[in-house]
Length: 279
Image (spheres, helix red, strand yellow):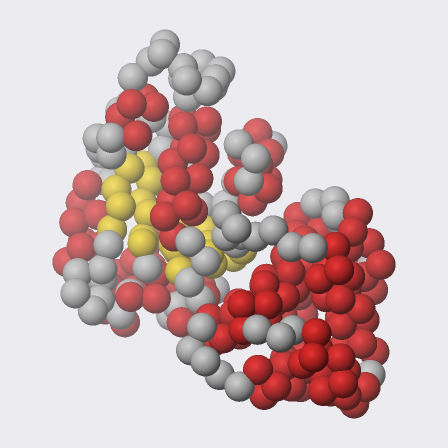
């Protein structure tokens, strides 16, 4: 498993430091869900996990969503209903039979309303050793605070398959962040005098912000989960001094801007907004 977020969870499991509930903010819920299942294969394996293992039936049951100790909850209409959580509680009254954990996965934590979230609190406030929870969302700020505050929050962002950029674009992104980090007014001038002419098409702007997203994610993981800084981003070491909370805020900002750029917003206004909100 190459995903750094889940590699760290595997390490936490082996060190007996695994939290009981996780809030995963992701730009691709399906990929994140797949990685959760791969993670569950590894920690529930009755022997020593190997890719393509044919020794037991556990992986097959997980792949076919037939393992009764793993329950996935999807929104029913506009919300996740209280009754869905009550059914989950009933199902988890007994210990797991074929695995080490009972696991619930909430696909769309922002769809928990006050009633279903309050019903969920028993799992979070009185955690049992044999129960793990995963809450997936595209934006953790939309998740009810009572849920968010009781989970370990993780970022699980994925690059698009076509995320291939030139060295020139990467260098421009690094130079831009150096401008943004040190002088707000000069960064606004940089938008007007350099970036607007350099980024000629909307797709170039989106790609540029994807590079920024990659930079912030790399530094966030380095500050929060001890991941190595990519060689091409080492000139931005000052970002580590900003701390994980700032980097998380910037990640959310860039992800939101990428989404908004798909709605034909004025590029100059978007660039200026990035600078102003970064300060």
